[in-house]
Length: 131
Image (cartoon, rainbow, N blue to C red; front, side):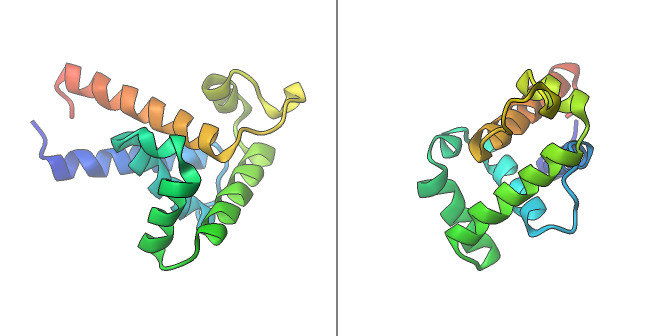
């Protein structure tokens, strides 16, 4: 059985791998903000329902910046990943991809989808006794 710290590190790695697969470049500030947002949402999905009131201010405080800069950096990271990312991953997460002509997902849709997959994988690992 793994400790909670080891489990948290595995979840963080899972989120990072998924984001890189989705084409979010790790050098962007938005990458760190999206990762933090996904980890917060994985713990408590309520934050996704109120990104402007809960999520952005919390991330801004964490990274010593403003809510607006957090929102803009996340939007930029999603836009870049939408253009460059793995189309199969987008189709799996959102049911459509950039080739379908539909617009990119919103910040909250993007964060919620990744957090949901991470939570499902984490729960599947617990059932198998891995996490």
